Length: 468
Image 1 (cartoon, one colour):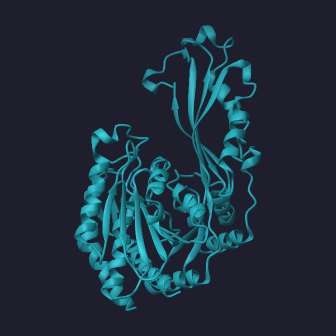
Image 2 (image 1 turned 90 degrees about the vertical axis):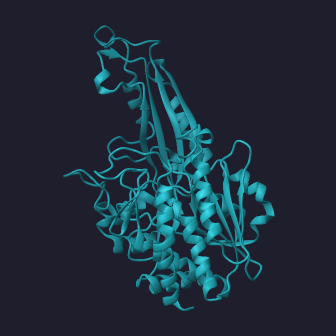
């Protein structure tokens, strides 16, 4: 392999072709289905899929076949087959659906307006992870430019990931044997600890999402008349949350959320902590004077990737400040998001959390915890020798530094699904979501130099996979 030729081809393709189409993609407000229940009527998802499909057709590789799969009532799936040599198949994964706008975008930036500032392309969905389909096909094209053999490749680009991938199993079932005998999965929807080397995700946390409701009255009443007699629904929820989380330390009280962390993962965490040091917490936009939960990077990475955490992500029944009168409100509803350790049983956790929150509510208030989704995490199989060597070589060739391993605090539902379906498969789970890239929040950006180097790394790993 001529690595300089690979680099030049990838750089040229990104500058001349990928960046322009990514800017068009950012302009499409194709929010995931749970954020846009009328996604079919709005047509944004269809527009995004067609944009990606049209680009792939214009930049087709040898023998490529492309299909937009459609199932009644389900989001579409872009499926691309590229023939190769050998019996094995490489599956390359990404998604096209996006998170909603969120507030707090800096002056001159907007979720649906692409803005290039130096090495960064700002806008919703570029790094998470609209680039994946373009990067994956470019990596294959880079090999074919040099007549370097690769295995058969299939690209699976879904449109439901940000909603928990609940449409994806139906497409996978429909594809059946068309997926082939998958021996390597390449996922470009993960994080990177910095922009100086190739990062491989070794584990993903699961996610339990639900709504916790406390009803105390059939209608709101004067707070002066009722307080001291009728308990506040908000105070009831506070006491219920104390059953599942220590409100001072944040430590979980749910027994099924306390993991046993494998020795290899602890070793990888220590190595990553040594490289990242203070940037583990320094990458977040904390207000002046705010302190992280700890200054020990080993503890922070451990808790972020293998710990259980609770976030209150939304609320109902609480008026805006301008509308907040002296009323004892009849109900409060909180949206709860639990991050689960990679090896936790999501169903067992759901049952335990529901029991803890609903059992014997204070003052016999009407309390309900409604589970909306429960997804298990994922712990990668042991890395094969050939893949470890390939990732190290690729990282040194295109980044000039060794490859790194670290878990991720978020979820990618497809990884657990694939791990069960293809138990002998190896995984390269990586991505562009590095420091300050802020996927899901304001000012999301794609780091262009890293995107180019990552694309080249994928090309080298594909070549080494075929030669293993």
